[in-house]
Amino acid sequence: MEPLVSIITPCYNSADFITATINSVLEQSYQNWELIVVDDKSKDNTCELIEAFSHQEPKIRLIKLEKNGGVANARNVGMEAANGKYIAFLDSDDIWLKEKLREQVVYMEEKSLPMSFFAYNRINEEGDIISKKIEVPAIVDYDKLLWHNVIIFSTSMVLRNAIGNLKFKKAGHEDWIFWLDLFKQCGNGYGINKSMVLYRIRKGSVSANKLKAAGNTWKILRESEKIGLIRSMYLFSKYAVATVWKRLK
Image 1 (cartoon, rainbow, N blue to C red):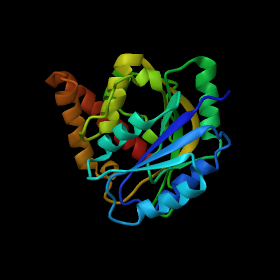
Image 2 (cartoon, one colour):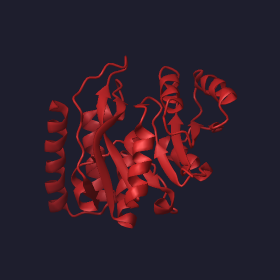
Image 3 (spheres, helix red, strand yellow):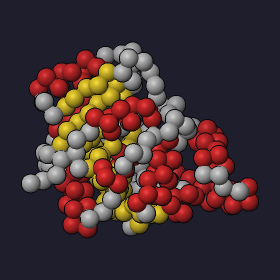
Image 4 (cartoon, rainbow, N blue to C red):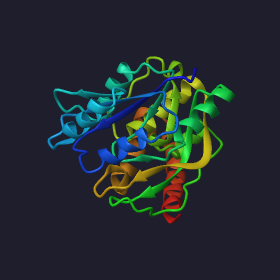
């Protein structure tokens, strides 16, 4: 029997994009999944749109949080509700291509891997592709991830047992910190250099705010990972070069 995949989607005021995101799950060729959407007290009609889907498809569950707690908390709530052997993360404005889940499950099952991630393309708010394929390395470990986070969350899938009791921390670049913590436990992540995800770049997003992202990176190196000043400066310089190079692609 095909293993169950629990898809975790946090959302907040996502009415403009959540329909396309959920449709990309419904259109997956791999169908043994559950979609857990955690709404972080949206002020728009996000919940109404999700409920319309959940009424038609029982594999879609909506969890409404009573107060806004941030994306880290929403993902933690989603993981606690998950039943699958694997957990896949999908942000509320990103889109999966049709074979994403199937290819990832087959790859991880055949090789008994704890974690994998795909290459991707960037899209803008209108859904237009605005980049070439962003390639990913075949293997990433803790040390490699320290100087540059090459893993877009919506491309990832993790063996639930590999996560264990690990939780997301409320901090800038919480996704990056999560991967660093995970790799301390499971060793490596494995890249599939095939674009299976459309990653949306939104105006005003943290990922689009380069100065804020740089500041969060420095805090991760110094405060979260407790790395010394000299090595932090070296790793930060590598991060800066990698970031510029990625934006030129």
